[in-house]
Image (cartoon, rainbow, N blue to C red; front, side, top):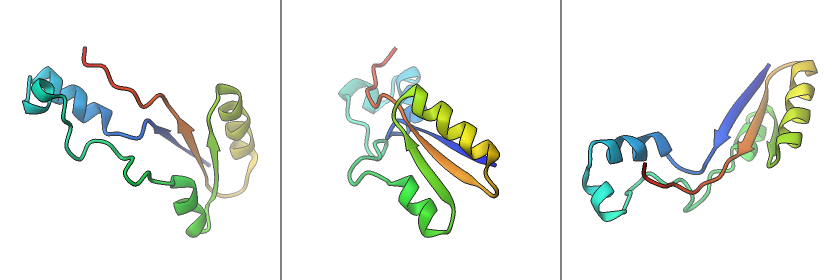
Length: 90
């Protein structure tokens, strides 16, 4: 069973909601506790530490291959799909 993490290194949906509501962070560009990069979270290492197979995919081709392998694997497989971390308010 594949488990996909679409990892942009942030809580982007929270940033989008703050911007939609014109919150303090939207005015200042300072998003406190919404970036998950200091230190970065290694989801593959966390999964492996609990006995779960895990892979990181940084390209679409890698994600396809990892998903195909996970569908054929016995037990869960975590796939950490790296996404663009940049954020531009709409």
